[in-house]
Amino acid sequence: MEKVWLNRYPPNVPADIDPDHYRSLVEVFERSCCQFGRRNAFANMGYGMTYGELEQKSRAFAVYLQQELGLTKGERVAIMLPNLLQYPVALFGVLRAGLVVVNVNPLYTPRELEHQLKDSGANAILILANFAHILAEVIERTGIEKTIVTEIGDLLPYWKAKVVNLVVKHIKKMVPNFTLPNVIGFNETLAIGGRRSLQPVSVTGDDLAFLQYTGGTTGLSKGAMLTHRNMVANMEQCVAYVGPAIREGQEIVITALPLYHIFCLTVNCLCFVRFGALNVLITNPRDIPLFVSEIRQWKFTVITGVNTLFSALANDDKFDKLDFSALKLAVGGGAAVQQAVAERWRAITGIPILEGYGLTEASPVVCINPIDLGEFGGSVGLPVPSTGIELRDDEGSEVPIGERGELCVRGPQVMRGYWQRPEETARTIRDGWLLTGDVATVDGQGFVRIVDRKKDMILVSGFNVFPNEIEDVVIGCEGVLEVACVGVPDEKTGEAVKICVVRKPGVQLSADAILDRCRQQLTAYKIPRHIEFRDSLPKSNVGKILRRELR
Image (cartoon, rainbow, N blue to C red):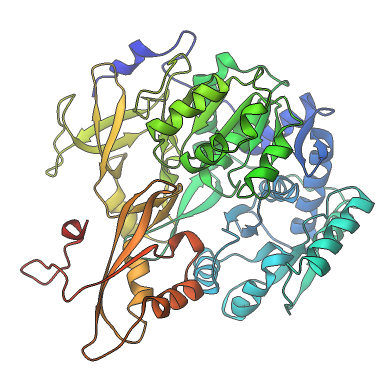
């Protein structure tokens, strides 16, 4: 497809970027720490960590992994944390040691956690004490040899840390009892590593930086192999696109989406670390009154979110009292932004939500709306620099502008492939093109609109839910004969999970019984919101359940 979108690019946005401008994410990080050493890099719970402190602590963590644990270049380390100061310390520590980050959702059930740890082959894990009991259930069946446990307040000033950890553990009772082998405290690893010197590791663009897990049509998540070059390229693409609006060393970014999610990882953490910005980490964005109270103290310039977050903030009775005079960018991703939400947001803040589009396999950003758009347009924007797109029909032929087709993407941000899944990789990447499975249209200016999903994926508050996984759990419930899972529209989460169930003859099966099993086996956002009992399910002539008819 001809790159018609280049004519619509804002001024000073280049057609291409240099994906090899930096050799690795480590080089980007160390450059920023040197340039912005005295400026706060991350803040959480009222305490700020400077770039200089982040450099020292991440170096100490890298030394511990390298010299105490004996991990060598390319081995995997899992990080299972919410948005805390410990996350960037660990993230950059793992990368500086030449190791590979395996981001883990802290809300995983034992079954989900076991699969990811076994599949990735992670040797060590950093986990918040609040979730350690989940790990304790499965660790013997994984390759984890060392567990590093941290508490919420560990990197806060001494007395504040003591109080926070005491309240969390003994008053709020948020840390269930657990027993794990080969455990060490996070602060102890920093103390050990801080007494030694880091042995230099040569990290290049071809080396893996992340195994970023995403759902699969088989119901099992698979690891997208994202190299340093993939991540540097996507960072540079985003920086080139929004760079004219950004001032180095002066931005304050509200980071409420989890850093373990690829959208926030790339856009908030990596891009704005490159700019020398301050990321204000929100540990629990679900508590909207507390969230609003926390950001009141900041004259923030950038905020990212998903539709549900923007909606919740806009509907809070104190949000419109905040000072938005410095706000210049609000970026929406992970799920479609609803027009009503976008209009309410702009009425309150004076700033439009710039919606984008991406997927884990593209590191993730493919499209962003131009910063001079001015108003909500309903599209996911224009392809970022050095990105090619095509729309193809079911036979693989390109369709003309204006017609629907599967969105295919090519660019330096496209993953190497799926970890240890060559067949899946071959189905997803063909001749350098990433087949997204999303049906889209492109207009004459190059604006992309996502109109449907070719796959059966359900998008709940920006998180992927795949029907087969839900069906596999539900079918294990005694009394279920058949089950089909589909997504249905939901004002709060964009989409919600619905299951249609056929009972076994003569069995009295309740919705509560099914939900009880789902709560044991699935993360909260995957749990069905709607359960419908039916006498039968629609099927094709070969017996395949037709989800499209249920939708």
